[in-house]
Amino acid sequence: MRYLMAVVVHVASSVAMAMPYSRLLPLLLFLLHLSVASHAADLRLFHSADRHSPSPLDSALALARAADASRLAFLSSKRTSVPIASGQQALQSSAYVLRAKLGSPPQQLLLAVDTGADVAWAPCSPCASCPAAASQFLPANSSTYTPLSCSSSWCPQFKGQSCADAAPSGPCAFTQSYGGDSSFSALLVQDSLSLDSDVLPNFLFGCVNSVDGAAANLPKQGLLGLGRGTMSLLSQSGNLYQGVFSYCLPSFKSYYFSGSLRLGPVGQPKNARFTPLLKNPHRPSLYYVNLVGVKVGRVLVAVQPDSFAFDPATGAGTVVDSGTVITRFVATAYAAIRDEFRRQANASSGYTSLGAFDTCFSTDEVAVAPSVTLRLEGLDLTLPVENTLIHSSATPLACLAMASAPANVNSVVNVIASLQQQNLRVVVDTANDRLGFARELCN
Image (cartoon, rainbow, N blue to C red; front, side, top):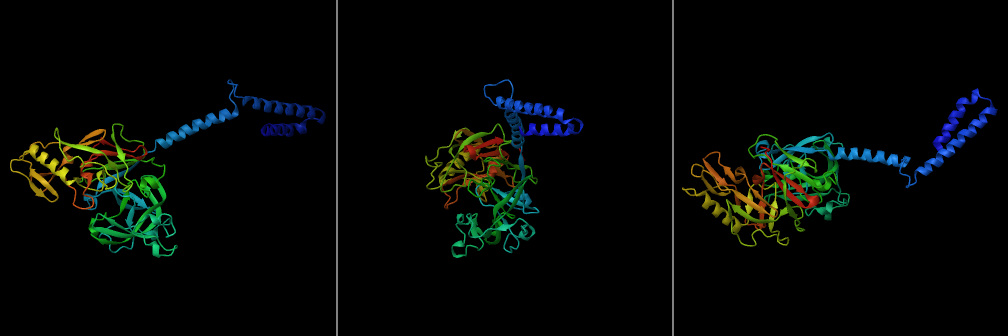
């Protein structure tokens, strides 16, 4: 109505100067009649029984649906992929690393990819005790860097935080162990994290200012936590990645960033086979799966019934972890798997030990080593031979690339580790509580 009245005024003003008043008044009344009649027609078009002519509202909704469909298609076509490389070549580290950027303007770091951790962290300048030759994040050079105080709701989530004895306005400082033989002290801070073309503002991470213990065992330039906890990348990114990511780890001998971390549901392999994810409230960050057995060749290895059983109270079960290098089985299960492997390999000169490996043999004596298959709920994962054996560079030896769980607090946990995940696309789908595998050569 308001629009049509404006038309009336516009028409009247256009002809007023050229038309006598006696003729102008009937014209104005005619235009006003049209405007009222048209408004009545508009009201009629809203009637739900009229299916022949769309109302302006229906037309607007149709346009909105079309625009939304295009927008959603654009959003769902977004694919975020971050290159991954072996830290062995890039940083002389056993961890796998990716290129990430912190701060404004962005500062590039090679962060370790760790599915068994939540909190991201990076060495911050100054840090004299951080690993030698490590690149350090420079907080002073970032305009978006913000340290958090003890009054932050995030601070109490750290067991090693020192805020109990500090003023609420004091910095949120915490200490965290890593790898069992090292620890670091850090400030809880926020800054922009850049992954591929994605920028996550106000990303929480630890700004490391000192390291104790075996500093050489810490990731040189920091870590990106891909666990399931409240401070992990998945949790901090909200709905951006819809609880889905995958990674493909290249050979640890690779010199190139040929692997990838793929964030979000777009582009995930359609041929992936899945097993359910199990939840442990006492260790909520870890990706537990149900390992029901192990086959060597065609033989299902006989193990004690509770070897692979999931028990949240004790932490027992099987974890898929990118931060552990060698797959570990509880002691009794490993002994049975190893003995069956030795029996089928049948090395005439017997077996020797090399470092952590106790089943090494001459490659001249064993033409084809037996395969190893991990029987998970819903799928059998037969490991490629390069994921089963590790070869010595100095001697013609090959070793079964598995070991017994260490005799410590984790002695009840089986771990499917990074060496066994090489050149497989590992898909984590927390939205549907499942984890999958697909064969993919990322070299």
